[in-house]
Image (tube, rainbow over all chains, first blue to last red; front, side):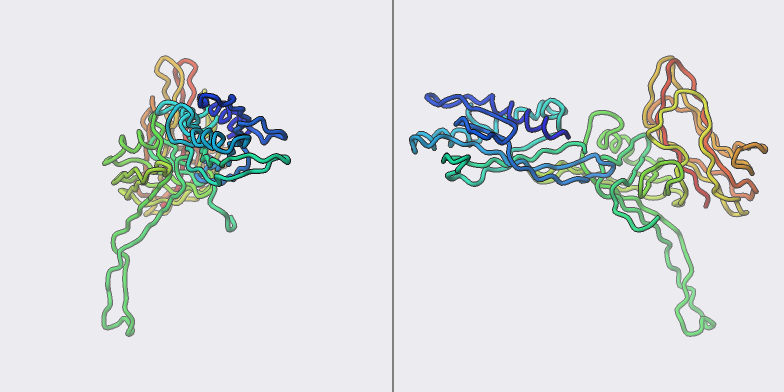
Amino acid sequence: MQFSTVRERIAAAAATVVMPTGSAPLTCTGYVPDSVMAPHFFCAEMDISYDKAFNRKLDIAELTCRALISRADDKSAQKVLDALLSGSGTASLKTAIEAARGAPGELALGGAAHDLQVMRVQGYRWYEHNGTQYVGAELIIKVIGEG
Amino acid sequence: MGKFTLLDCRLFAGGADLSGASNKIELSAEFEEKDATNYRSGGWKEVKAGLGSAEAMGEGFWEAGDDGMVDNASWAQLGAVGAWSIGPDDSAVGDLAYFMKALRGNYSLGDAVGELAPWSGTAKSAWPLVRGAFAHPPGTARTATGDGTAQQLGALSAGQRLYASLHVLSVAGTSSPTITVEIESDTEEAFGDTPETRLSFTAATARSGQILRTAAGAHADTWYRPTWTITGTNPSFLFVVALGIR
C-alpha cells in the first residue's frame, strides 16, 4: 500500500458527505493541515503492522482521522459533528468512506487497498489545533492491503 | 540456515500459490510407535516405527475470484489428492522444500463480524513427506523450451526413490500453450555425461499440480534438473518444481 494514496482517497471519499443544512462544506485533506478550515476532516496518525501474511502480501494500518467543527455555537457545532459521526445518513462519514470499499470482489480506494473499515469513533471532545479550539472526534479506520 | 523469523513461507497446493493468503503454515510428520518390548529388551520399553504419516496445515486470509485464490483452489481440491509443496523461507532454486502427495481433507472459513475473513485447511499425506529443494522458482516466467539449474541431491540407494512436484501457476498464450516438464539426472553438474530422464510429468495446459516418484532402485547419478518443452503461440508459464530423495 502507498499510504499517501490511501490517505488522499480516504479524504476524497469523506468529501462526498452531504453536510446538514446551514453548515459550511466539509473540507477534507489526507494530511494534517497547518490551518483548519472548519468543518474539517483530515487523516492524522497511523499505526502500521507489517507482515500479517507471508511473502509481504498483507499489511494492516490503523489510521486515526479527525473531524473538527468550529465551536462558534456549541449546540449547532455538536449537531453537525453528531451528523458526521452517525452510522448512517447522507452526512455519515462512515457511510461515505466505506462506500470506497467498492463492490464485492473489488479492491478498495480505487485499487489502493484491499479493504477498509471505519471501526470506531473515540475522543469526542474539545481539540486545540494551531492555537484554536474546535469540537471534534477521532475516527479509527482499518485499512488492509499488500505490502 | 540460521535461526530466522518466518516472513516468507511458501505454500503451493495444486496450481495455486497460497503463500500470500497464508499467515500460518505447519507441517508435521510422525511414525506410529509399536511396542516391541521383550525379555531381552534389557528392562527398557522397546518401540519400533509403524506407519508413517504427515500433515500440512495452512491458515490465513480468505480471497476468491480466480483459480489461483484460496477459496477457488480449496473448493476445487477438497476431497482430492494432489501435490503440496512448502518452503520455510522462500522458494528460489536450492531453497529447502518439503513436499508430498496429500489429500485435501478439510477447509473452513469465516469468523466474527469485523474480523478479516479467514480460511484454514489441512492436507494429509498419501505419499511420504519428502525433504528436498526447489529446482524452479515460481516467479520466473518461461516462454521457450529450456533446462533448469542442476541440483546435487545425491545418488539413490536400493530402497530410495526420486520424488518431484510440479505446480503450474499460470498459463498465457494462444494456440493451446502447453508445457511438458521432465526431471533429468546426470553424474556431472554440466549434464555433459549421459543425462537420463527420470520422471515425466503429464503435459499441462492450465493451472495444475502434479507429483511423481521413480520406482525404488539405486543409481549413481547425483545431479538433477528440470527440463521443460513449451509449445503454443506467445506462450508464457509460471511454475514451481521441487525435487527430493527418500
